[in-house]
Image (cartoon, rainbow, N blue to C red; front, side, top):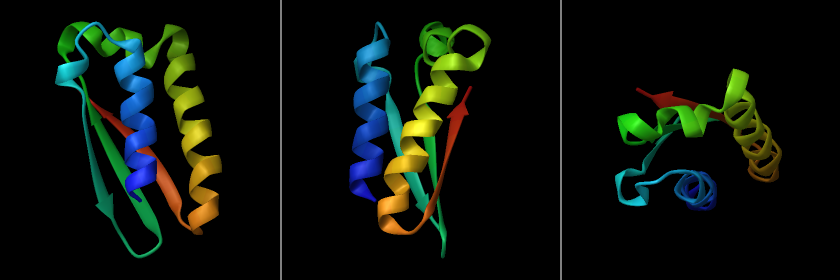
Length: 79
């Protein structure tokens, strides 16, 4: 699951102005992994994107990558 966490961290750090504030915490369950993404408040809009398109794209990448591990991955963006 470390690869999933690193994927989301890499994408988020590429999008924001303050990459040092990006934190990704993985909470593993039996069949699900929840990735909690935290960014600086000023960068929240950049991670979510217009009409949520950027967040939706990140979730799509995450779900296709997590299929390799036979687990369901969920991305939560913490405000």
